Length: 211
Image (cartoon, rainbow, N blue to C red; front, side, top):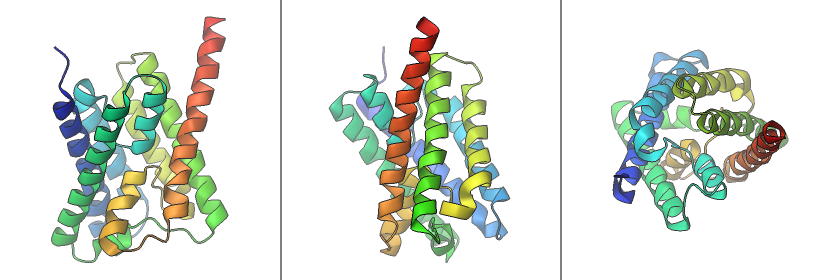
């Protein structure tokens, strides 16, 4: 029997919570992108393996939108996933702020140049969602490893430009709790646009395979 929508939403909440907790908590070790990149990638790897069979392990509104447009989610399921991801982000951000005072200010993704920050978020989310769509379509047994490594590599490559969110939920929790929404024009449209581009490319690749 397929998991209920409640179970799937709970899985999305837990996976997003784990991602945010790992990413923010890792900042307690100090500055630099290496530890957060590894922590985020490992969190995704573990949660994909643990919860992928329940919800598909999106943990990212841009990923959920891509699967909705693929026909894998209905509108009410998409809204439930988005709500669960937002609540997971807020809950993890609150927990991290309690455990590590001051960590939210360090963990809020930031950019020095709007254009480069937006481009980094589009580019990073494009590759992340493309990898997810392709490994899911292929039913690859190492999907969790591929997705986790992709997150780590993208954070290492692009965090200096945008903070390496590639996920509206990664930005939303810290931003809302801090009351700092100045990055909304980067961290909301960037990932969604990157995800839509990835969906278009994945469909083109699928047509090429079929031909």
